[in-house]
Every structure is written in structure tokens, then in C-alpha cells.
Image 1 (cartoon, helix red, strand yellow):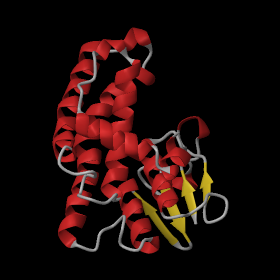
Image 2 (cartoon, helix red, strand yellow; image 1 turned 30 degrees about the vertical axis):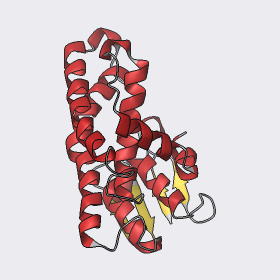
Image 3 (cartoon, one colour; image 1 turned 60 degrees about the horizontal axis):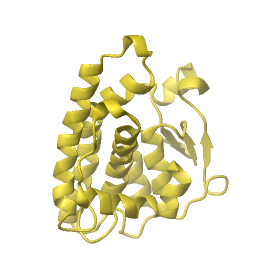
Image 4 (cartoon, one colour; image 1 turned 135 degrees about the horizontal axis):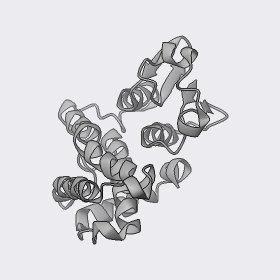
Length: 211
């Protein structure tokens, strides 16, 4: 099995984190190939034949090729898991996958505006009001997850699932951006998020993929 993509990518991080939770070890159970940004590769004809989006990651499992990080995480959890990361109870699974979709389709578009504006845009070209507005909207959306986590330890209930992986990498980046960038103001004291985040970053698989 191969995972093609740079580890600094949020989308790659969630795949590598998932593999770690499933007990899969890089170099033994799968190979990771650097691709994207300074590594190139993702703009080659060979890569685009596998993944027409030109984004990372791409999974190659024998003759099976899959792109879109959430789809890859679901595939891995179904292939190698025992029903923990991808719950067998359909309502709990739907709840977990809801937070995957929230992180990718609702929360990350806002946070990405702030992240790209602060890390990949020259200072003289940064639109600080737009960056601040996007970050504030992301912060407002994090409150929804916080309200859930005030009532339960993980996004879909009592157990850690794929939803925590997808939401976790995005919220972790939101926290880091907020702490490192004074113009964004002080992060709100979301007690549910704080407790959950402390727990997920202590997981060995998180440490191996994001630390």
C-alpha cells in the first residue's frame, strides 16, 4: 500500500493518523511518498492519471486507487478496523461521518482562508480583514462542536471514531493558528474542545502523524 502526499498536508495527516490508530506502521505496512508543494509529483501526468484533482493524498492499494482524504479514511477503517473507528451502529456512524463532512465542507473552507493568508501569502499582500473574518467564522463554527463535547467525550459519543480524526486535525490547526497569530485575538475558552483536544493529541497515533 502507498500513500502519496506530504505530511504537512492536513488531508494527509488524517490518513496517516488513521493508519496509526489501526496499528499500521509506515515502512512496514505501507509506504508514504512525498508529494505536493515543494515536493512536486502531484502535477505530473502520471499522478494526474491517478488523481485528476492534482491534490494529496492518493492511496494506492494494489490495483485500487482512491483519492479524497475522507473516503480514504473510511476505506482504511472499514478494511483494517474492527468496528471501532467506523461504528457498526448506523446512527453513531452517521453522527461520526457528519463531523467528517463538517470539518471538510463547512469548517475547513473558512479556516483555510486564514491559514493560506497567514502562511503562504507575502505580508504585503495579506488581506488582514478577510483573514480575521474567516478565522472568526471558523471560531463560531467550532462552538457547535464544543457544545457536543461538553456532553460527551468524543464527537459521536463515548468512543473515538473517524469523526474525531477528521475534526481533530482541523481543530488542532485552528488552535495553533490562534495561539501564534496575535491579530486574530484571544481564542475563546471552549472547555469541551480543550478537554477533547488534550486527549486526542496525547494519542500515540496523533503524535506520530502530526507532532
